[in-house]
Image 1 (cartoon, helix red, strand yellow):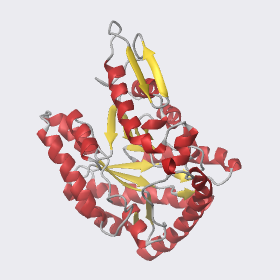
Image 2: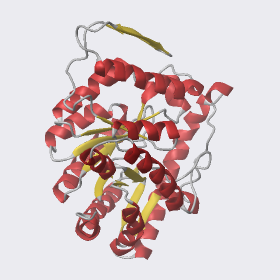
Image 3: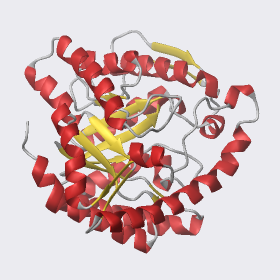
Length: 368
């Protein structure tokens, strides 16, 4: 089982952004030194949610030069917000810079406010995403002498006459990682031999107290499609080794009681930041075209904690992960900086990294 770090912290004011960036760089270096496999970055805009998420590929390129042992993933690239030409160019550059250690999560996005900022109709986000991915595949496949690739999709229109430069490092292109919630997304990952993100809920309910039930359902469907796709053993093994289950907040302390008490503080600050951002997000939902169809529960509810959090002593956390390892989940993505990143929050995040590396990861590394 692999272990990766989800860089998902927040700031609540612009004067905090600089220190946040410096702290995130240091946290990444600590993760590399402790033997984590990858860091993943979100793709979000206009809010305090991970300020560097406004251009996570640029930030990943910087991190990759500093910390070359790590893989770099994106959870999740909101495909409708990206011109398909720029998306392919940037992925190829990062694929070259990392020598193929890129995992590009892809999805249609969740936030009307972000869609408005990029001129995308929220209700059209899913078809725009599907068409953008199809255009991207055409661009990745295009050779210099091929006919131009012409496209018109939502706010994006263009004609590529020559080829995308640079070429990808990875044969074909860098690995994409669809969210295996819809059959079409799971099948896309399986047919290409790519890993997938395995969700722990079924929309429109974004939470619940039995996440393993959902993880088992989605993982089994994806794995069966992957095995039926006719790939060689190495491709299947690599895809499963990166198939990812995500925890928005992983928090470890010396005892379960201490971890839960500190988690309450973390989630209280997290929810306050989310509520502050929601004041602006609600302004985007003023017409039928921009109303969300799902709602995330409050972070302090048992539904949210059970779905999105992994907390306790190192022993408790390891015991929680056992059924996921037995199921075959390849990569556990750990949100270690959830919420506003204060000095206290950063200390707790670093302690979690240390305890994961020293007391949890050795129990699972090398198994399977």
